[in-house]
Image 1 (tube, helix red, strand yellow):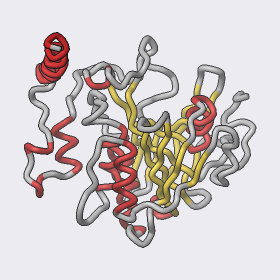
Image 2: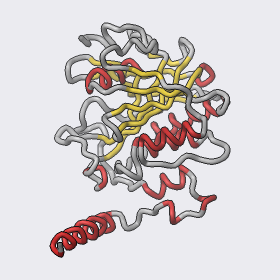
Image 3: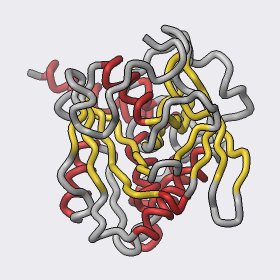
Length: 297
């Protein structure tokens, strides 16, 4: 019994010591007053900035850093490095896309599920036809823009939630069409995806426009930080986007199923749409597609 107690003490005490040594300067929500505890303040406190490196060299080909090419006076933008399908088994089509802010129709909170508690959260923006337009003339059309904050995985790495706690991964805002996301994540990884429409009764179109502008700004800012499973992850950064448009109480969590519950309790989410690996087009979100990029089979 004494040996068992000693082991428990060792496990409980040693693990936090390692974490404290690597993240002693990272603030927690307790370091902020309630009025200071905003999504942006927490993000800046948690983020550990990476030194100079090439974010497009030596990484797995399904992710790439986006670039803002131009922005008009009315907020419309031209964004480079939006994934639009595959060109081969291990090669992806990356294109430049014109985004018309005023043609935004709907916003979704997306959740790719890996199990009971594990999930990947992201944001989807739906546009009127022509509002999300690929500048490549032969590109298949899409009305859905996926904005996903992810660990940026090198070719010699595999993702791990534990490694994500200890600065093992850089990070990237990965942009894609919904068709490309479905082909890569739903069909490729065989994971079901839930898309929760943001309630129009709780969020005006002007607020949704702000979400879109925030997502584009964050995705193309060129800021490079370490990914952190609990403090600077897909969830906390997707919340930065949605919290940027909330006038009152913000939502804070680092657990995927908990944050979905909180958003539902705040009546911000409507009934979800399921995109199932067995029938990805059955949800009616996307047209049946044979190919989402040249040469994709």
